[in-house]
Image (cartoon, rainbow, N blue to C red; front, side):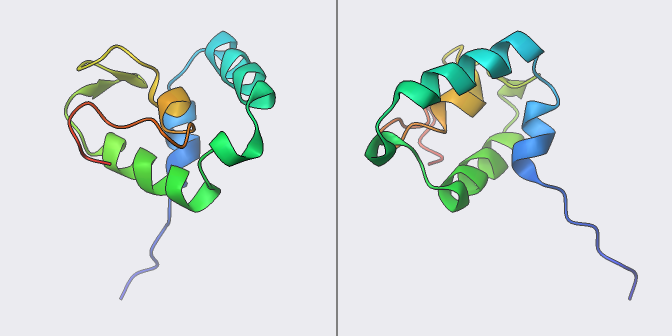
Length: 84
Protein backbone atom coordinates (compact mmCIF):
# COMPACT_ATOMS: atom_id res chain seq x y z
CA UNK A 1 0.00 0.00 0.00
CA UNK A 2 1.15 3.52 -0.75
CA UNK A 3 1.71 6.21 1.83
CA UNK A 4 -1.46 8.00 2.79
CA UNK A 5 -1.24 11.75 3.05
CA UNK A 6 -3.64 13.37 5.48
CA UNK A 7 -4.69 16.92 4.71
CA UNK A 8 -5.74 19.21 7.50
CA UNK A 9 -9.30 20.22 6.67
CA UNK A 10 -9.01 23.43 8.63
CA UNK A 11 -5.90 24.48 6.71
CA UNK A 12 -7.30 23.58 3.31
CA UNK A 13 -10.45 25.63 3.85
CA UNK A 14 -8.44 28.52 5.30
CA UNK A 15 -6.08 28.47 2.32
CA UNK A 16 -8.98 29.49 0.09
CA UNK A 17 -9.83 32.64 2.10
CA UNK A 18 -8.33 36.12 1.95
CA UNK A 19 -6.17 37.14 4.91
CA UNK A 20 -8.63 39.84 5.98
CA UNK A 21 -11.37 37.22 6.44
CA UNK A 22 -9.07 35.10 8.58
CA UNK A 23 -8.13 38.14 10.69
CA UNK A 24 -11.83 38.94 11.11
CA UNK A 25 -12.51 35.34 12.18
CA UNK A 26 -9.65 35.43 14.68
CA UNK A 27 -10.88 38.73 16.12
CA UNK A 28 -14.45 37.47 16.35
CA UNK A 29 -13.43 34.24 18.05
CA UNK A 30 -11.20 36.08 20.51
CA UNK A 31 -14.31 37.90 21.77
CA UNK A 32 -16.38 34.72 22.19
CA UNK A 33 -16.46 32.95 25.56
CA UNK A 34 -14.77 29.54 25.38
CA UNK A 35 -18.08 27.71 25.91
CA UNK A 36 -19.40 29.23 22.66
CA UNK A 37 -16.48 27.98 20.58
CA UNK A 38 -16.51 24.67 18.74
CA UNK A 39 -13.86 22.18 19.85
CA UNK A 40 -10.96 21.61 17.44
CA UNK A 41 -12.15 18.05 16.77
CA UNK A 42 -15.70 19.18 15.98
CA UNK A 43 -14.41 22.08 13.89
CA UNK A 44 -12.37 19.68 11.76
CA UNK A 45 -15.42 17.42 11.41
CA UNK A 46 -17.64 20.32 10.33
CA UNK A 47 -15.13 21.71 7.86
CA UNK A 48 -14.60 18.23 6.41
CA UNK A 49 -18.29 18.04 5.62
CA UNK A 50 -18.21 21.53 4.12
CA UNK A 51 -15.25 20.60 1.93
CA UNK A 52 -17.24 17.74 0.41
CA UNK A 53 -20.28 19.91 -0.22
CA UNK A 54 -20.87 21.28 -3.72
CA UNK A 55 -22.31 24.47 -2.17
CA UNK A 56 -18.90 25.56 -0.83
CA UNK A 57 -16.85 27.71 -3.18
CA UNK A 58 -13.64 29.42 -2.09
CA UNK A 59 -14.51 29.00 1.59
CA UNK A 60 -17.98 30.51 1.18
CA UNK A 61 -21.23 28.60 1.59
CA UNK A 62 -23.46 29.35 -1.39
CA UNK A 63 -26.54 28.30 0.58
CA UNK A 64 -26.27 31.00 3.23
CA UNK A 65 -23.37 33.21 2.14
CA UNK A 66 -21.26 32.65 5.26
CA UNK A 67 -17.55 32.00 5.47
CA UNK A 68 -17.56 28.40 6.67
CA UNK A 69 -14.51 28.84 8.93
CA UNK A 70 -16.48 31.40 10.93
CA UNK A 71 -19.85 29.63 11.07
CA UNK A 72 -18.30 26.25 11.86
CA UNK A 73 -16.20 27.69 14.70
CA UNK A 74 -19.24 28.86 16.71
CA UNK A 75 -20.70 26.03 18.80
CA UNK A 76 -24.41 26.74 18.36
CA UNK A 77 -24.34 27.52 14.63
CA UNK A 78 -25.68 24.95 12.21
CA UNK A 79 -25.17 24.13 8.56
CA UNK A 80 -28.06 25.49 6.47
CA UNK A 81 -28.16 22.12 4.69
CA UNK A 82 -28.15 20.22 8.01
CA UNK A 83 -24.86 18.47 7.27
CA UNK A 84 -23.69 19.28 10.83
